[in-house]
Length: 351
Image (cartoon, rainbow, N blue to C red; front, side, top):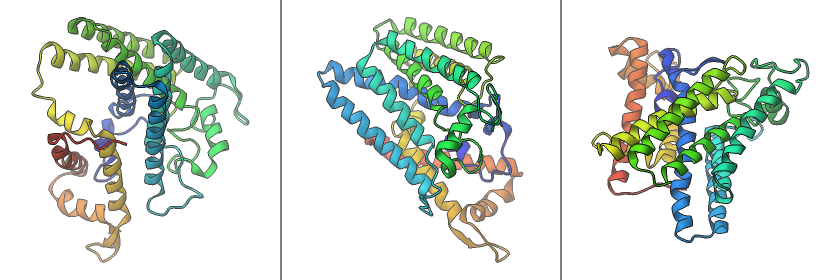
């Protein structure tokens, strides 16, 4: 997220580092579902241990609600800066979706078993598909999956009004109805986490996760002709395809670490991963500051501080796309360096 959200300039970005315009998939479209999936995986690993230690479900539920509210509020804060215009502040967002998905998935884990969770995934994906296909949208009819005519976009425009993502105007990629697909992604992670905790031999666990991933990819691709893979709508085909890909990556990582015992490559991922929400929040805060602060440029006209730094230190040494990527990589490295002392001292910036 830090890499793809912070190019030197949005006018020069390599195609794999952009989201698909609508239907379809790019490597960047894997980032958010991977994050939600691993949030789901962490839920049984963390809460399962607390339940086994005797922590009460009611107390854990209160902590889940409190944490979700804080994460949602941090997302709103990022959207409020720098103007704090409450009349047009964007209500949906990345942190807000993480908060809602974590809230639902964690509470579901506390009160149900894996069979119920699997049924809820099916209900969420199939019910959402049925709604998109069967519920008529005023002025467009039923089954329209275009940017403006789909049911999810219409609900967002109707209920959120000026609080949508301004870049899209007619829909929000983290909107209300599409959250059903994102919750399903998180619950699929919960199922994977429960399987990992089930006590199988490490090699069998890795094999099982890999098989599940291949099945998920196959189901997502197979569903695509009827329900296109679409990140902004978070369609069922997108949820299954990306969860399948996440399972395959998880299986490879699990095999490398738990079966082969190869941990030499993990520190950079641990440094950023143990404080992932903090990294996302503060990196976004820094990015907002760099584009909000205006200074006099070389020609005397005002320009953003980011543009000034990018034009002075990156653009003169490389073609625009390479320079823009170099800025993004430098940004990621900056946060790797800043987070290293916290990892070294085992300090977790939790909410």
